[in-house]
Image (spheres, rainbow, N blue to C red):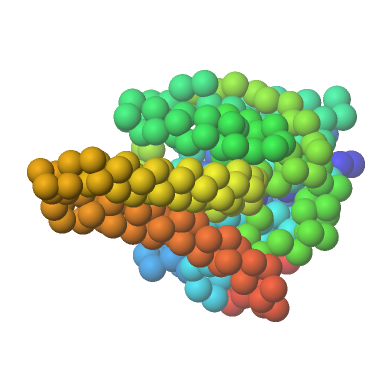
Length: 309
């Protein structure tokens, strides 16, 4: 009998844990042809989540728990839990249930048709219209800059064959972003469209900085285009500043007694080019941080405890 692992990363989800568990339990029990395990990976929650997880684990040996030593970030937490799964296929869902659990049987069906990766793809969202448009812009930028095909409005929610997870594990990447790693490894996922629901309970731990940090990491991990833009922009603005200097010199020679450039153009030019330099130095810094992550010899996640493994 084939085994399905369902991985649920969570952080401060005390209002959702029991509902998520009950719904997943109901869905998996209806799939009588499969064995299963449920793995909830807690990223060092500060609410009542860990107590609830321990209580459920004491009553159900198919319910497994990973408790992290600290908050290692959502991507690392999810990937570490995927690595801990023992199923022939591993389903990744979120504890807030915005991405529908009810589609799990459909994901498994496509996996049985020999698709190694089956992803959910948001066609629309019941969250704010503005945020959905911002996300669309982000995906368009990643798609245009990346040398490898990227998929819009996928967040990693979906099903992965165990061989795919093993290949990701072999990469030993410090912070693998699933939606970027999968295309990089050459897998062509089957996409299942869905409408993202609003969060019913609790409050998301994601803020603007979290989204921005993820976006920058995705851009750096998928593309070298920003570095090339920096080189071309440096050449262009260098030529522009040289040309401006020549124009000012010619004007001064022709209108020696009447032309006075003043200090304002100089201040504007210096401020402009300084801002360009700071921006590009920030991009270089992000690439250097990515290199630092790759040469650092420590695990992605340090676990405090495993329960029912």
